[in-house]
Amino acid sequence: MFALGIPGSGTTALMLGALIMFGLRPGPDMFTTNGDLIWGVIASLYIANFLLLILNMPLAGLFARLLSVRYSWLYPPILAICLLGAYANSNSLQDCWLLVGFGLLGWIMKRYSWPAAPLVLGLVLGPLFETSMRQALSMSRGDMLIFLSRPISATLLAVALLTIAAPTIALAFRKIGRRSAPAA
Image (cartoon, rainbow, N blue to C red):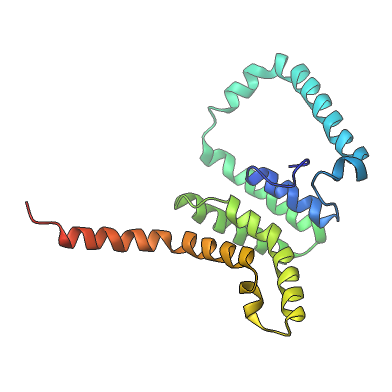
């Protein structure tokens, strides 16, 4: 993620979003422009591994016993700590309601097996997309055909539309195939 600026998972997408929010641009230039940050992260990973080794040796049994605690006992303290942290951040109940709302969204996404990575990527890349789209539309004086004027952009848009429409097209072909198949 640091070297290419491409997140490989939902966690790295969150890290990418945090870096972009702080005005850093992950990519090949990040090692030269923000070398102190990169080497600080790498050093902190070594320190964290060393501290985990020191802590895990004597406390491994306790950590294993924590796995036997029922989730119904763990959820209330975790929720209380999260609400306390959200309120303490800005002394606003609105942050607590945001926490509850996004918690419900996360629960729904987990219940229906929806992946979180596309949502995180959308939140991270959405503002960049909006800025670029505004620039393109201002250059074309509001003409949407600017996105089809170059072969590369037209091809990428066609592939994106095909990717979005592929499940619906496949379902239609399956239904047509069932209708035309002779009854056995």
